[in-house]
Each structure stands twice: as C-alpha cells, then as structure tokens.
Length: 353
Image (cartoon, rainbow, N blue to C red):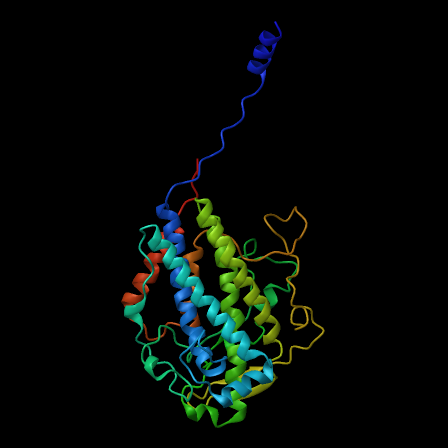
C-alpha cells in the first residue's frame, strides 16, 4: 500500500525540465561573430604595434621597433608609465586575434585574414621596424578623431541607444575635423617640440577613442551569440577592452593644453584644458555616469553605452573608416570588411537545446 501511494504521488509531481544540451561544434552565426572580432583585433594590433615601435616598451614579448626617444618623451609628458601601457595594450590585442583565429581553425571554420592588405606605408621615423615600412594595415597619419565619447560617458541624461539623434559634444573639437597624425611621419616631425607634443596628444586621445569602440562591440555581439562557448569568449575578451578604455580615458585628460599647426598640411589643432568644473568635460570624472537604459521609466544606471546590437559590426567598420584609419586601402579591403560585418550582423541568437 505504501509503495502504491508513493507511486501515485510520484505521478502527481511535475517532471523536471530536461537540461538543454550544449551545441556541439560552432554555428555559422557564432563563427561569423568571432571572425569579425578577429579581423577587428588584427586591425587593432596593427596600429598598436606601430605605436609600440615608436613609443612603447621594447622587448621580446612585443618585438620589432627600437623606440623614438623624442616621441616617447612627448608621450611621457602625458603619462610617465606610457611605454608600459602601450606595450601591454599591444600585447593584449595580439593575443586576442591569435586566440580567436586559433579557435575558429580548431572548429574547422575560416579564420580572418588581412595579410593581402598589408600595403600601407606608415611612419619612416627613427624607431620603426624597417621591415614593416610599406606593410601596414592601418594609417595613423591622417586621423579624424571623434572624442564625443568623453561627454557621452559623463552625461546622465542621454544614451545613444535611446537618443540616436543626440549630439554629444567633442572633448577636442579640432581633432574631429581635418586630418591629424598620431605618430611622427618622418624624423622631421620630431624637430618642433610643440608640434611633436600635439602628435603625442593626438595619440593620447586616439587610444581611448579606439578602445571605447571595443568596449561596446563585444557586449553588442554577445547578444547575437548562440553557443555558450562563443558567448563566453565574447564576454571574456570584451571586459579587457573596457579596462583599456578606462585606463586611456584617464590618461587622455593629462594631455597638456596647446595649439599647434602641422607644418606639412597647415592644419591647426587645439587641445583645451580639461581641468574644469563643467561635469561634461571635467577630466577627473572618469567613472561612467549613470544614464537612461532600456526605457526612461526605469531609474538611470551606470552602464556601457551603446550596446544596441542591430548593425553593430557594420557600424564599427564605418566608424573606423570615418576616422581615416583605412586611408590608402583598396576597394577589395572594404569589400572584405563589409562582408565580414554583414555576416556578423546577420547572426541570430538561436536555441542551444
């Protein structure tokens, strides 16, 4: 009788929901997300290597350059640990694309490969790796740097995901127009100390401008991932980009105020003093201010922004293109990057059961 009651009782109990089985292998959508991330990291590593050759710490971990003393000194006016920061950021980006491509290959997926586009000149100043002159992917000598991230992360009333038409003010308005070099193009660029400091200041603002892009890219792409492992990769690499951004956003505020004119192009740039009381510009306010998120009926919260996933990969390609980072690249380069971006943006989060 007791056994019969137990049997009846067990029939009445709800059956546990089966645990979803993890996806075996790598979905096409997840591969596309990781492939685009790998391509972005290859591009990022390329320009960080250029920075490290001229202004970073030289060692076996990130080999290739011999350093440019004048440029390094100008960078260290901004931050005395600049060489180590540049070196470590460079090393991080190299490991990112190396891991991502190795993971893709391990799952029999096509890796990202930009080698055919390593044709840009880059700097010829003392300190660069002579073997890489004419073999760069990115152009650091004709940049238009959008510094609106500075006020975006200090604004507690607006979020680009909710307010796409809101214009966040630029921290350095003159960097956002015309073209500026962030590295000495030749040794001639190191002769005028004021202009050389402007070059170093440009680099100091370019660093966080790039890293805030990765800061948003990874969580935005994670929203499209299907497999737990792909999601883990995106959520594990992404926060390192946030750490980079936090470091460089703090450093940039130390760029000394100055005005300089490029002796080659005649373009003027002015770096303002950001030690101010205006909370939108105060260099001391480096923590992300709370802002609206998801909808305005909810309380404001401190978050990464933007993280809206629609079109994020194509948006990154456009952002880097508008920056001038790819000036000199052929149409085939843009075709390749646009295809990678389209594939990533078409990835759809699926069921892992």
